[in-house]
Figure 1 (cartoon, rainbow, N blue to C red):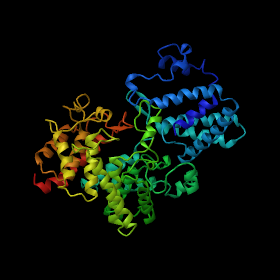
Figure 2: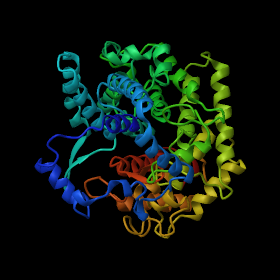
Figure 3: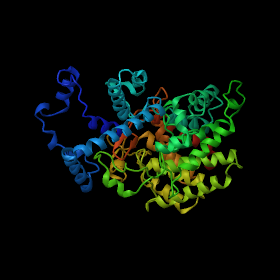
Figure 4: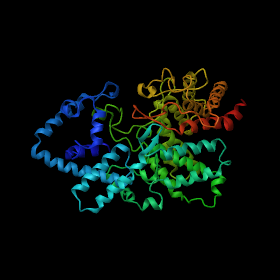
Length: 525
């Protein structure tokens, strides 16, 4: 999605007419480059990258191909011009499809900004086409989706929010903590949010242009997985379903359906059974051949595709791999769905769960841990790994569960907490100093919450370790009920951090709630 507008802008040789005099552009050129902009020989910088950014060095094969493309640009002649025109037409068509399928939000801010520029260029070239002018206006109206004001100024998010993802975890924490009855309006509003956020499942979403692309021929043409029935990371308008977001959304709604505060609500939005079936279908079709679950789509390629990765700052991005987090979430949702609808696609659901269980067993490391690809890092993945196996029917006294618990207990700090920073993700080894810089005594409230959730789900018999962890969370709580914001807890593509501000409250509440409602009564501690 990012390379589509990049290739289009390069292929068109687009240059902003007022670039040399526009104060904003001049200021940026001065700020971003260490040398005078006009003196830089860009042909010599093709393979420049700072050592600190060179996480995934470009493979020699890719460097060779990039160099060959330079000669293609120089000597391609008429053939180049013919192929270039055809390629630009295809790229433009795919960008327009992406804009319409996402209601001009686009999958992320990078292709959002460049798609908007491409839309503007296309409009200038076809000034008599009112649709193009309207599309650019719709693009501009979606820019604020990505903006937020931080303590140090305006920022652009890496996504248009994490609304659905955060709400899923928050409502599950509230339900398991036994607080839904105390806050019935919260449960009802969460249910209403999930109902209107399910992708292409409401009258409003089905009246949008995005719904036109849900037919099988259109999905085949644009390489899109089925969307209807899924849940997004952010909002329904964004339109991209993700396996774990669909799973957590489905699981949350099914759990809410068990509450009288929701079922007896006179204004409850109707969700027909078919909508749950649609969500189940999304999950069943997203399972990979190895039994695991990726994010947006099935694994469509091979590991050697990474030789063609042109991005030094991101690792393992050329195909969508199976992840412990997505797999656990999908297992939990399918198990919860099967409980509610035991007669719907029974064989497929139970088989998917069994295959996913085996995947989790296969990728568990010898030390009992799992590597987390979407959070920092081993505590996060261990929570998902342990709970995923348990949802799939793994006995709590199995070797895999015991190894997972032993790994977590080994890394508990003296203050009772657990902590990892971004280096765990980057180096794929548990952070040597924990959260020394951005935590408390090497520990952090989010990692501690994850570790405790795993240990308590497995009914770990080291009650003292669990009690110390809970005591740490209670000690770290602020007078107003909040918990302190600590280091970055999220990550993607191995080397890019994500700040989830809701995590610092959701996971401590969830862990303390599970201790109070389940673990403490079971172990009398």
